Amino acid sequence: MLTADYIILGLLVLFVLVGSLVGFGKGLKFFTSGIFGIIISVFVSYVIFGLVLSWDIVADLLDRFTSWLREQGSVGTFFADIHIDMVVLAVVLFLIVQIVRMIIVKILKSIFEINNIFIKVINKIFGAVFFAAVFVVLLLFVFQIVSWIGGDTAANFLSYFDGSALLLDKLYLNNPLNSFLS
Image 1 (cartoon, rainbow, N blue to C red):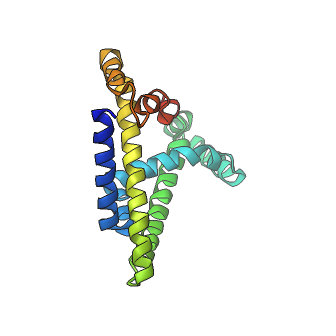
Image 2: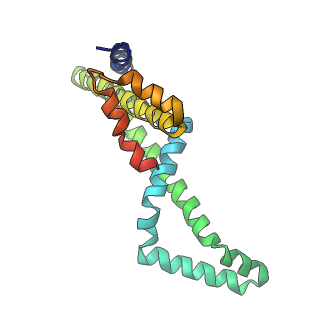
């Protein structure tokens, strides 16, 4: 095993321990509030934007909005030409996703914080699994950033993982975020 393997295993164990101490409810609240919550909402809005745009009722509303803008004169026509309707749809969709995200997190946190021994054990187990998943995602993001930097940095990074017992070199080369974020 390489030094990198021990470091990764140590960090994973640390994340799992913190996750089991904090629990799923509080961990979910932490990782979905603040800037993390905004990033999640932007990502979800981006993913579902095309789906929402394909709905007939949304297309009709956008057409009506664009027609109304064009009736307002040259300024309205300017805004219609730059497709301000898409911006409005994106903003409204983001706000709806934010509200739904907050409601879901509040409900899940309340469920996992129930004062019952069975729920407490489940909360600790899910917390450990959740924090392990967060660690893996953070590791993949680090790999992706190093991949974007490229050059000697990426080559040295990859050579550091060469022969890893945890197959970190394979994970770096086949990073699932690579195809998603490129």
